[in-house]
Image (cartoon, rainbow, N blue to C red):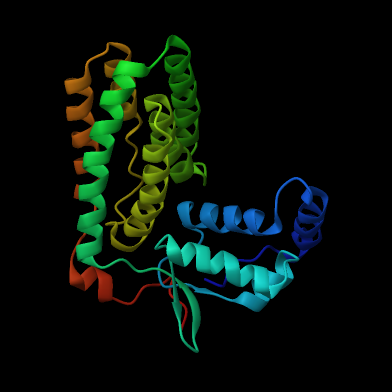
Length: 242
C-alpha cells in the first residue's frame, strides 16, 4: 500500500478544500485530522511510511507544516520518527498493547459511572441517535466503521462531563486502532454495536455498577479478538512498505 494520497482526479479538489477553509481552520489541523482519520479507518497501517514531500504536494501544505503535524502525532504515540529514515505509523509492542488496554478498561469504567450520574435525557437521545448511525454503518460495511464505533466512546466521555477524561480517551482510542491494525486476527468484522446498546441502556437506567461491568466486558471482548504474540508482530505485513 502506498503512502497516504488521493487519486489524481481528487487532488485539485483536496487542494481547493484546504484553500477555501483557510481562515477557518489551520492547515496543520486539517492535515492532522486527515491523517488521524486514515489511521482509525485503517487506510494507514502500522509500519507504513509517511512521505513528507508527497503529503506536502497532495495537501498543498508546506513541508515545515507537515513536519509539525508528524511531530504532534509522534507526541501522541501514533507516529515514530527515525533519524535519516523519516516518519512511520507506530507499531505497538505487545507490552504497549497490554498497557493501553489496561488503561482503557479502567478509564472507561470511570467514564460510564460518571455518565450514569450526569447523563440527561438529551444525552441519552444523542447516544441512541449515534447508535442508529453505527448500526447502519456496520450493516452496510462502510469504510468508516472503526471511526464511528470509536466516536461512540468519545461521546460517552462527553456525557460523563469531564473534558480531561474525554481527551485521554480520544488519544487512547487512536492507539487501540493501531493495536487492532497490527494484531487483529483478521477473522471478519468485529461488530459490537449490541454491546454499545447495552451500555446506553444501563446508563439510562442509572446503573453505574452494571455499566462498569459491561464496559469491562466490552474492552475484554475487543482484546480477545487480538493475536498478541511476537509471531504476529514480526511476521511480514502486507501493508508495510519495503
